[in-house]
Image 1 (spheres, rainbow, N blue to C red):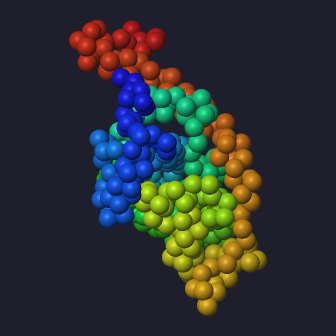
Image 2 (cartoon, one colour; image 1 turned 180 degrees about the vertical axis):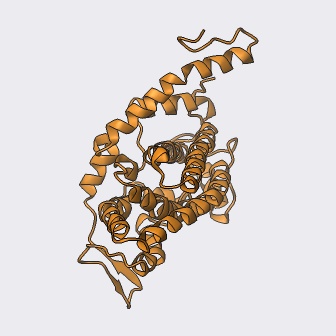
Image 3 (tube, rainbow, N blue to C red; image 1 turned 180 degrees about the horizontal axis):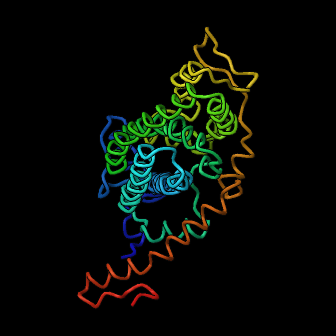
Length: 332
């Protein structure tokens, strides 16, 4: 069933509406106390729309994030790695379903969100617009991209919207296993042959700038940070998340004997923060708008899966209404 967004929206939820200011003050007092906002509660229109935007992008990212790793399942170097990668990919797709459901509580239907994804209208994380060229890419994705995601998701799990918060707490448990799996793979390569070490270093070189972009534009570039922080949708700015990631994972990267080519990368003993070369945020915007190296492939793959799965959706709908279940095209 497709649900209309307006059916979920609250009365007097927009600036200028009667009683809006009083309702907003009460809402913000609740949020400041740490109360969770639930689907039936009054909330500002902008709060609802910001959450739909964020959760939709997050759900799309879980689906698209399974694609570069999924391509490597047939080529995993051992049966153990193949099993682990199968489980990880399955987890990521399951996370997307949890997140689409959380977004549905705000009034946007799963069907509409998936339609926007396969038509190239919806965004997903910048890192999944790139190709996984080697097995070492899979290792870097599983370790460092999942590590960056955990920094974001553990923070968002304490945010103000109840359904998103609860979904994230479950997701973070599984992401912690994914990160450990990725770290183990990177250790294996870093302590292996010269060819393995070179593959890992090459992958890190190619992925480092996309990873540095993962948490979004710098605070001075971000359009949404002030509102998201005010309503406790986010509890850390983009730059604060980036610093948390760098402080925790740069020592681990260096301990594996890996290097980073950023000439400005250094730790400031006074501020206790890492300095780095600012990423090319114009390039970031181009990538998330669908102009990355693998953007067209990601959308085409999702569109094909959606089309080939149409008969399953029709069968489920038929079974629910006690009608004959249709077979897929070409089936006897």
